[in-house]
Length: 276
Image (cartoon, rainbow, N blue to C red; front, side):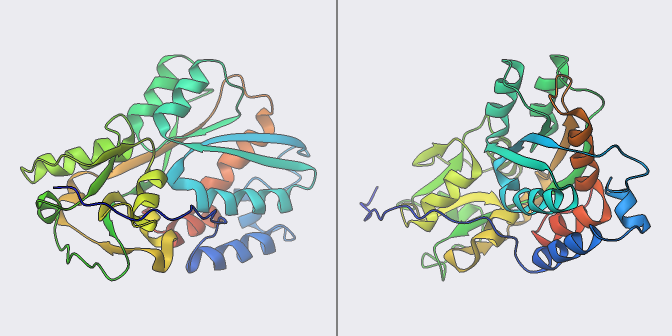
């Protein structure tokens, strides 16, 4: 049974990093003026890398939007004369764009499978490195009005649930979690990336969505998160690589090093990601 819902206009959300992520961003900015070992590990020491300039184009999974936006701002402060631009979307869409010839410097995927699309095509400059992991969570409207407490609850008649498309890492992970619980779920819609699924709940166009913990955290009080044990069976590794035909190789490598550095990891874990 499907019940009608009142649509509201979409709200453009500015990128932000919650809690420890914001503090880590301040630390990143402070590091730009220091010459200590932390700056070296982030690729900012003038003695270890050439002076960087120009645009760096990063294709990144939608779930990385808040943390990578913060890291991009920090990178620009550390390297005056650079500009980091992002294309956030479903990892499968980004991989297809890269193998189709779209110009980009860095690719950060939400799963090894979608990264393999790029590496198998010979489009990566080296071996991708896993930099974080992410786990699923159920997102409900604030206060959890339908009292969802488990993954099984999402199969209840009359509950409008959205999932990511099965070709997208968050969708593949959701299906893996459902399989682990021996559950079958037919959503009211499949969304092209995790942010689109979350937005359905934020706008009260759905009663629940299976998304990442990081997305629930980034949404703040716009949603309520519900953990479920099956999510431990569907943890996603996130790999990152410089691309073979990167227009700005030096800056691309420096951005990847920032992501993997202690400072970058503090931003990412502050946003809810797990270390590899």
